Image (cartoon, rainbow, N blue to C red; front, side):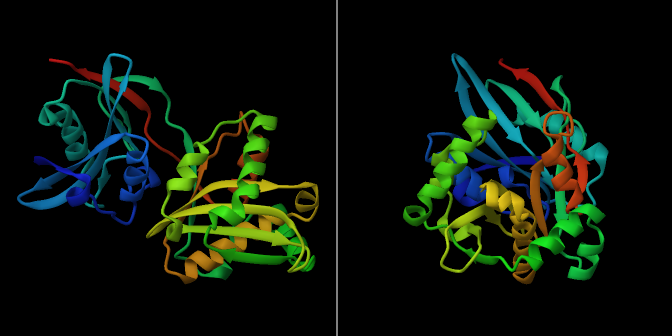
Length: 294
């Protein structure tokens, strides 16, 4: 096993199972906040078998190397080789740092500080009939009611000047419901041509009653933020928005839509919405810390 490092501009690429945090767009966006990143490539006999984006930052006096949702491996890379690679990574990097790992699968070496969370993922490679059949009956019934309401759905790229009021509604919603998310500046700095905003209207010329924003990092897309007013909730607008966005993304060739955390204990309603959509619920790796300070 060989481990090499390269700057983001020359060492980053996206494999089919790449999560948002391991895509070059994510590193490029964080770079605008001053976060340094570097790409690690794992290879055997000259053939790449894995890739990881490592983000370097400081927590007070402590340098931290953060590896979220990585590395990304080729399907035939054995669990044993993956574990051995992660053990060797800090020493191969030759940085004095506290390493924080949140692997997309398996376990990373070090002290476990948080269990692996559940993630919701929608497979977009299946046809529409199969994806609709995978939905929970109640979810599908809400979708049918939203379709019969004849809502107007608009799918397009994010236009920051035009959509700023919608983004502010989501920020106000966070404060009211006391949940956290990526800062507004992250949304503003994500490549605009790699976004999809879905808005729902009672009529084509009427105000937005609900919206969802997705970040694109082909061949995967990720749900980012959303908002719904009382009328949107009454008409099940988010159910229709998610379905139409999936249809659109599937037609463009996207293989998966990541819906993010699925936490039945803290947000049971949201967890039911995500699992009811037909998403596969998968537990990723635990968060571990390991020190390499000498």
